[in-house]
Amino acid sequence: MSRDIDVLVLGGAGVDTIVYVPELPLPYADSYMIDRGIRTRAGQTGDFVALGLGALGLRIHHLDMLGDDPEGDLVRALHGEKGIAFTAVPQPAGTKRAVNLVGPDGRRLSLYDTSRGHADDRLPEATVRALAGASRHVHVTITQPCAHSLPLLRESGATLSTDLHDWDGENPYHEPFAYAADVVFLSAAALADPERTMRRIADRGRAEVVVATAGAKGAYLLADDELTRIPAATPPAPVVDSNGAGDAFAAAFLYAWLNRETPRRSALYGAIAGAHACTVPSTEADAIGRDELLVRVAESEVTAPNP
Image 1 (cartoon, one colour):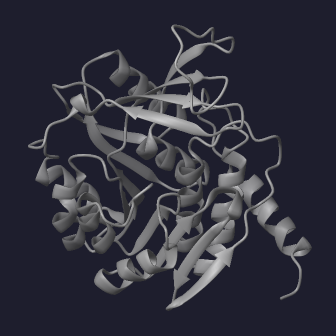
Image 2: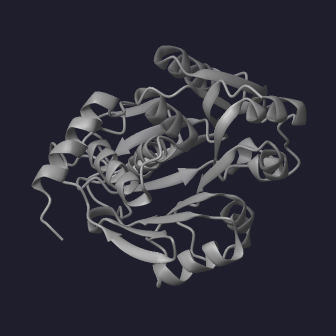
């Protein structure tokens, strides 16, 4: 079978409205004056992973449901501008959207509009089979309706990854994704004991690698039954926004992993791409390129202390 697609990204297409607020949490007030503007742009988790992988030179295809609305037009235009192939399944409820409140330190609070989908939404089986069968790897977002496609994806023979985001380790919604994927990403933000949750994912599922990102504290890497702390990379410019950092980490990690780098070296790629993303304002969709990433990886290895 020909595998003409390096990575199929399933789900996670949508539009965010970015609001820079004076502080988080935001105290109640009748109104706030937003000097930096309120901007709406295409780009949610699946979009950012697809763009990140595409910027690194991989052949990407993105599949999701979109509405016939201005927000859907923004998503289509972004993929066209970045040269990312996109298959849009009609979504009568409209394109997914969210509002991101971003504080001065780059932290964000996201408000997701869950009305843009329904429990009985499905991606067409024939489309999923065809695209997954043509792909080396599939990255599955945890957005509805991707869980229903997991059995088809496993049948395709492609390796799978997913990002559980700020899973608390208990919500059952995340478990089918966690246990079906070969590579699992998640945030440590809501985990009292990251190692326990990571080992449970590996023990109950198929994961060869589990990565829990921890912001400025770096990341935890579980591979070959060994837990390793991955230090955070130094951002190349002032940190302005953490939005998209986890997606950038996942994209760069997968780029390295698919090129047969070790999990630890792949995590270095991810840390550098994640740090770069923190220097890019939420109002932009700009991923680190392959040449720049490789240069920074080489520089970090030269300056890293001997173990």
